Amino acid sequence: MLLSGQDPAAILAAAQRLAAGELLGLPTETVYGLAARADRDEAVAKIFAAKGRPADHPLIVHVLDTAGAEPFAEHLPDTARRLMDAFWPGPLTVIVPRRAGVAEAAAGGQSTVGLRAPSHPVARAVLAAARALGVAGVAAPSANRFGRVSPTLAQHVIEEFEPGLMVLDGGACDVGIESSIVDCSREHPALLRPGLLSRERLEAVLGEPLRAPDAAAPKASGTLAAHYAPRARVRLLASDALASRLAVGAAAGVLEGLAVYSRAQFQSAQAAWRWQPMPADPVAAAHELFAVLRVLDAEGAREIWVEAPPVDSAWDGVRDRLSRAAAAFSD
Image (cartoon, rainbow, N blue to C red; front, top):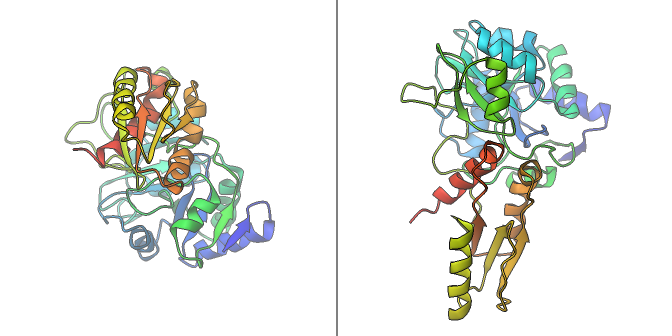
């Protein structure tokens, strides 16, 4: 059931659906989410069931603002507040100590919880309308089957789930990859998942370097080694390795069903492979990444060979998603 996110009646209906403990396809600036009220474990359980997601893999709770975050947090550490002041609403999730007895299912049973304030106007309208109905915040992982490519269009969500799911159409997601996740629950902040926000921007606000996650770090959404995978096999290759493989494959005539996603355009007389240009700008590449993977899947690609992004922090989010997509098919 697809409704326009520009329709006030649809916004109210969506908020009422959340208040009743039902699921909703919700646009955000990162990707579309599969949302349920975070303060009712039985509602959150429907997300895990619909996605086929392990119940101990935590979800991110979406709130309207800092005031909306406070009911879910035991306290908001200073590091979290600085990041929230700088980047909320926007594509940043902070991990903080969770208030006891609240959002246990959404947190995957952990003593911490991930919180984010989305900037998408439709998401914010729904969160505001839902708060007026007593919904403090919504858990909203990406609206796709667990481990698969995240949706950046409303139609992607419709394709993933049964027709009865209410989905608000908010257009194409501006960012296109999931939020950066920073653990603020311990003495020093750590970057658990890169996103559009660069490490340098985050560290400038924090005033200290971000640590790497260690064995004691909380689990976080979208950080499994294999994730974000299309049906086609993804191989992530350096430019020279990609050129070499294409030359060998063309000579052997074995490139049927191959798609190539790269910044470089490789010369070949072999017409059996399909080239999709990758933007040279990391923001543009992030915006289209998941949509491109879905298109190549729909076209029947057997394998997708991707040119590895530059070694530059601006590309960290794109590189992270591609590395996890390729890990799902590692030899």
